[in-house]
Length: 178
Image (tube, rainbow, N blue to C red; front, side, top):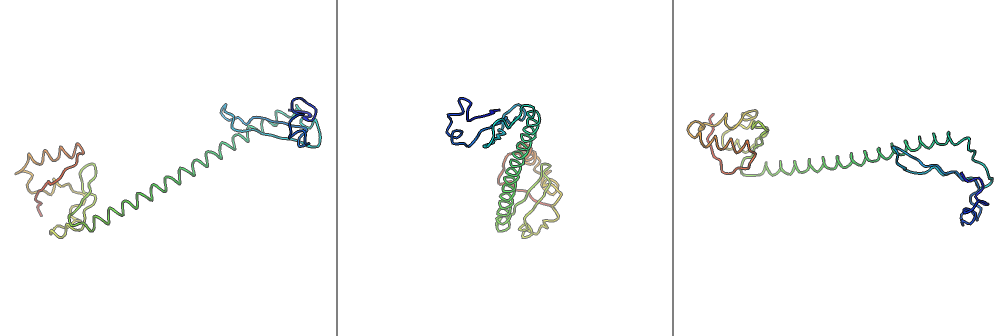
């Protein structure tokens, strides 16, 4: 509290005060979780001794509530920003997935997607060009539909080990049973 800034050193020499802009001044820190996040600044230009020491506890309570409100506003702004970032990332993912679907639908090869248990979750429609109904494969594994798994068991063991290690593979050919 500065009771009369116009006469109290060192404030009387301050250009802001000397031009009659402030006489009584009160400044309290806004503290949240032991961290200063702002200041409550009150001034009166007309009269000295406006801010009574007896009212400081009420003003401290007001300052504490203001600090909480400011922190809540900051957290809300952070949440809005993060939500916006998440929405943009989701939109980019949807666009990427659509580009992949468009590619998969126009590719001459057939493509498939499996879950962690190696069960088909998506099969491209081009498989029907080979006389296989893509809907028949959904919910099944390639090992379940292979007709050569007994005759070429070593190939299948190696292939399944590759899948379990989540390694890429190419040119794995097998025959399907109806």
